[in-house]
Amino acid sequence: MIKADYKKYVLNFKQASGTSRGILKSKETWIIILRENRNQGLGECGVFRGLSIDDRHDYQEKLKWTCENINLSLDVLLDELIEFPSIQFGLEMAFKSLESQNSFELFPSNFTKGLDSISINGLIWMGTPSFMKQQIKDKIKAGFKCIKMKIGALDFQSEIKLLKDIRKEFTSKDIELRVDANGAFSISEALDKLNILSEFDLHSIEQPVKQGQVDAMASLCEKTPLPIALDEELIGVFSTIKKRELLHKINPQYVILKPSLVGGFQGSNEWIKLCNEQQIGWWITSALESNIGLNAIAQFTYTKNNKLPQGLGTGSLFTNNFESPLQVKNGTLQYDKSKQWNFNL
Image (cartoon, rainbow, N blue to C red):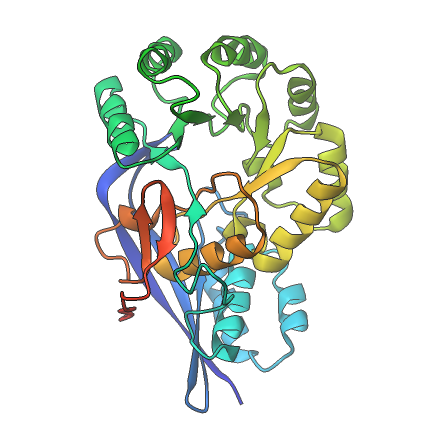
């Protein structure tokens, strides 16, 4: 018999981090702990307040139900948790951990052996132009070849000036630039802004307009001079039919998969299959999980053999993250076998 429990853990940011949704100072998460005989399995339910579809008043109640019914089959549990993608992911992770020889090695590979790494983008947080410019210089100095910059919080002209300054100093051969608008543009201004942004030789823009405006997003993806990546648009789309319809209707250039928001390994695999059918590019990113969740996402991502830079450089953002073998070096995520896990709730 498997026994299950869950514990809340609050991650504290090293510095307040700006997004178009406001300033983040801390992020709560939930760790599921499974025990069977002497084996232990760990999973992280990384609910993202204000963004996750399962940011609901009954979230903890559902976690409790999950732990009380842990000996049902995993398929039955996942079906019951369809509207709670972050709990689905935590559960998949915990079972994978329980079944593994090493509870932190979920997908053994050259990555977990320390023989290979995952190319990642460097994340630039919103702030004053000088603060953002300094972050960019620091990332380039640290060996990043791809940078993701959040836009939409400053006035547009300030952001354009910043991009202009970056491109004066670093060409697209020096650094690949992605921007993430987090839905900050209005429908009426979005195409004009995309035309202006396209002058800076950007790789892509994430979610230019708010999710749920499918016709407007479809029109943008058809006319855009700059590749568009769907992100928030995927949240809350549960059935295969609805997923296929969404991709067919919008026909984006890319989609971005956050396993905590789209239903874990199973949900991500389904989106990947549908994207591949329609020749839509994709990459995987974390959603500010602790190293428990980031570890699972990174190992899963490596097995997908996607050569685009992934969004997995978030482990060093917190003052109280769990110590782990995950290390960011030269613009890549690496698994340093000499580093030990220090998991203490």
